[in-house]
Figure 1 (tube, rainbow, N blue to C red):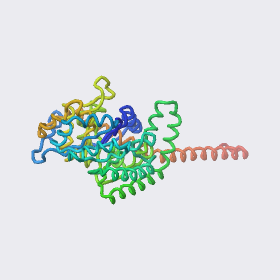
Figure 2 (figure 1 turned 135 degrees about the horizontal axis):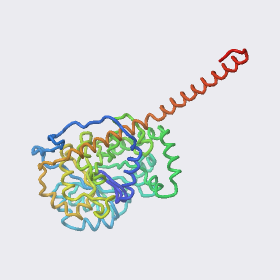
Figure 3 (figure 1 turned 180 degrees about the vertical axis):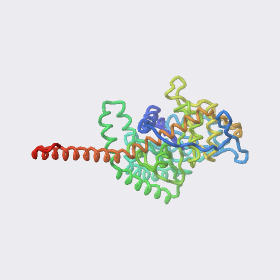
Figure 4 (figure 1 turned 30 degrees about the vertical axis):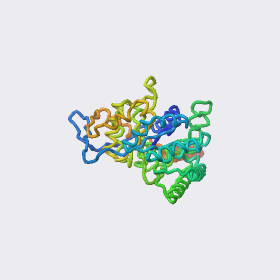
Length: 403
């Protein structure tokens, strides 16, 4: 989640890192795949389009807005009276990234506490420790929570919950832009065969979540949607390679950001939504001039919100800063949540094909060791047969018998 980040749910320290994270995971999965077809959960039209209908019995969802970036930017944003008044009117909460535990950051939290705006502590690490939580920095995460507890107590800060943003190690992706690609390749190969690393990380994070719960907090995790594909295939190959950890807490938030692939439309949310306990949409931060860092406009943003609300009563938004810059908060106050959304059939097909390819790639990746063993066995069998055949020829030649 940070100017990188995502979350109540979310995203990356800076937009470059966010894109790198998505790229690594997509590269790991870019093989081929079979057999996932999403069940219809709306009205399927003859054209293949999906119409997502509103439900007046549900009411508006609970919204949480992710906040990251420098403390000075947060101070400036929350000094605008309309920002806090909009959050109050929406009965919305804030998920605040905590890469630094300083007095000025505490003052931001106190301001939100005094205004009655619920705040989730987005537990982040300093940049040199990886920022996001993953298999590489479990011990640092455990120390960070203890530091967070002392910091919160010293300023009497109140928290609605604790958020754990599970994303790959930033240093891995920085290596992609430097002269360390060969080292990264060997690192990934080593991780592929190191299943014990993930098992130990899962046990440690389970211990951390238990400690957080015992201290009176609920815990939510922010995960890439591909974790759902890995579960479906009963694999851990993505976890081993990228360092993300499939941990369960009180609530899991899938980061379903359509800004990364506009051609998928809201179909990405439609396809993954049924498996999400809560959904994060985004990103509202980016550049209209650069297609790699596209930000959602109001039409795209409101469309994603309505589709997400079809599956979840709690929706995270990355990020609050982007919503403020584009004037979305005021428009959310009068938004018609029951307006139907039409998802093009070709977008749904693309999203389903993406899941199919991802799952196939994960499955193939999981089977590679067995395939390698089989190949080695067949090669050994072939060599053994050839050696035996040659010996028989030599023996037959010694007796003057045709082989």
